[in-house]
Image (cartoon, rainbow over all chains, first blue to last red; front, side, top):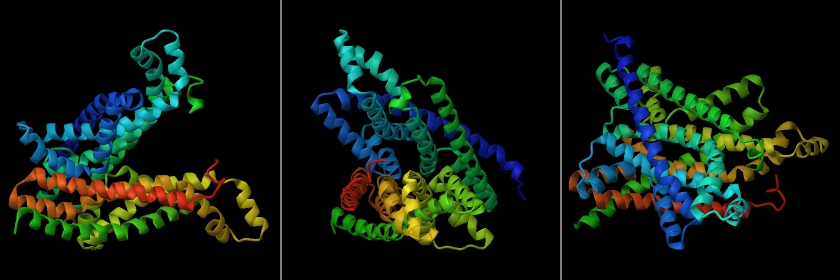
Length: 220
Length: 218
């Protein structure tokens, strides 16, 4: 008879993998999403349409389908033999970029055109106005939306068990198969996800409060 | 039969199952969302605490985990559901919990004057909530609700994990026979994108149709 104590460390190790998926996905999403948002607001018409199609596609297709499409189809066809973890992080990231572009676009729009125009009037270049005036405000405004995105991507990372990434859920399923006892392992996995969801959101909201600029927040 | 003919036949079979899943889950999740929100705002301490706890729990769990718990863990405490109903139950609970947050915020945003006027007309609390508050709150929550329903359409693909033969499951099965993943999964992707886009369009129209002039000003 296997006791709970025997497999808890094994499941707990999955937390690191889950956080790797989430951290990598959020980072790639940020790297893709922020320029996309800037392009959507300030870019040429052609660029805008490209970003819109990208955001539409990745927000309208289930993660499960994307994972299989990229892991079995697109990456091998392009000549990349990726392991499940790398592939999952990339797919989570590209998809998160589509969602994050919408978060940042909303934030940039809410900063208001006046700020941008004023910066341009002061002789700043387009890039400098965006970088020094618009983004410092927009990024602060987008933190709550970003906290939400963290919670979403955390829960979506569980879907990566379908590719066999050794995150929390994959390990839990192995434990269930080995012990034939579904109840306790699944509740442990559930508890871990709940703790990660709420603690992460809490941390991000604390950062939001710390970075708050008096007078900036009330305008939204 | 050619590849595409056979593939379309597979997809159609799965698509019908997906539609069956959604046809049950969507209306029931909306009802659950309304019920949970009402319970949280108007229920007594115990009821509102239970509703809040349920929502916090379901919003903290990944849908996959909820699905696996309903299908694999609940039988251990004597609750058996077949794959189809396990999926429907998990979808209703998850989506209902998310939707209830929008409805709750909408209920709280309705002017107190509405409630006072209803009382002045001699309505009971139940009449007031059903006839005065909820119709307005539902309209205000509709953009959020429709967002959640579009998520639900996409996440319905997870039902394949517990063996429901919905569209992703049939596509995956067909891929294991033919191994042409790019054609198979990109077609599946486009079908989901089509469903999500149609739903977005439908809800925009619904919002316009249900619009009451003046209500949108908070």
